[in-house]
Amino acid sequence: MGDVKGTSQVLNNFSFPRVFQTFRMAIQPSKLIISFGALAIICLAGWIMDFSRTVVASPKAQGGITELQVYISNPDRLKSHIEYYREHGERRGVFSTLWHFGSERFHGALMESLFAFDMPGVAKNISDGFRAISWAIKCHYIYSTIFFAIALAVTAVAGGGLCRIAALQFARDEKPGIAEALCFSSKRFLSFYAIPLTPAGIVIFIGLFIFLLGLIANIPRAGELIMSIFMLPAFIAGTLIAVILTGTIVGFNLMFPAVAYDGSDSFDAISRSFNYVYSKPWRMGFYTMTSVIYGAICYTFVRFFSFLLLWITRWFLQLGIWVNNSNKSVNKLAAIWPEPSFMELRGSPVMATLNWSESLAAFLVYLVVLIVIGLLVSFVISFYFSANTIIYALMRNRVDNTALEDIYAPAAAGVKTESNATKIEPEKSQAQPKPETQR
Picture (cartoon, rainbow, N blue to C red):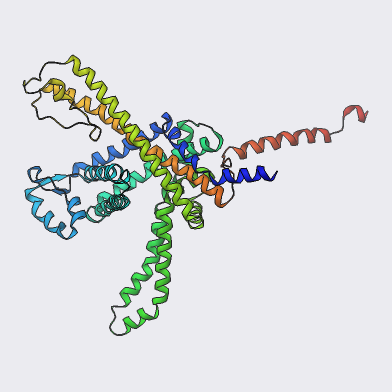
């Protein structure tokens, strides 16, 4: 009996291999469809809003340097860059600028840093990603407010649905449909939507105290004395902000799964994630690092598969197309569809003059290639939510000693009521006297 318990304890301590189930879960068609739909809606909203074109960039002949690149490299030159190129430069959209910058930093963190075990490089690329978001909020706050509100609403529905599918599959090996998953996330839309807003609101509320104390310090003579008297509460408030920010940054990945697994509201989800992070921080870090490395390997495999798909299709097409385009400058297929590479799936554009039919064909081929790229990005989204759902279940098991199979089921209450009603009716019928006995 003791040997069985010891073996069970050892297996429980090595529960991290369950993270390796993520690829099989993330590649499911239902999850890819939800992820692709959410990605398409967000990109469409960004594309429509980019008609404003408020980002200032230098001309392409001078490198096409955007104000975001200047902000990252040398923030002190941002104002002069905008003032000089506002009339002599080009204009771009905020979303397209963020998309291209984020894509570069993502591949930099993955291909150039993580696989080379350059952890400072990984941290630098991630830090630049957060700084890019801060640039958008500071320099284009109206655009950012509208766009991030739309993106958060889409993420709340899609991300909640992905976590719910992953939770049911991991806990009970069930595979709910797309409609069932989206229905679950829609009913808890406010909980999912409020998850990133609640910590920010708490930090701002506590920070107002320190801000007001700073305003009081401007009063001559009395201000600095009042500030010094209330410095201890200010330090306590700063400590609370630091605790909340640390818990939010490290435990944010667990908040969506908490709602999907336990049917929690936003406050309970935040409380659970903070508890798990601060109770077992090293285990949380180990699970996260394992999923990141495994995810990088899986992404490389899926990206290679996507490249192979595009390259093979184009290679067989090239066997049958030997004529040049209408301008007789390059091969027709090279003009319509540039050859893809592993790092550039869309291919490097070939400068050529196209007629209307070739331009239309190039546009249609471009859309198909974008769908392939979109599915690749959808896999990353699906993997992210699936991996964090598994990590949440493992952390909950370690901290709260809750079984992995224990999951919130909304239909359980209705089933229980029906069974009770079935039991009650026979009791009532037995209580009535039979006609034969009365006679």
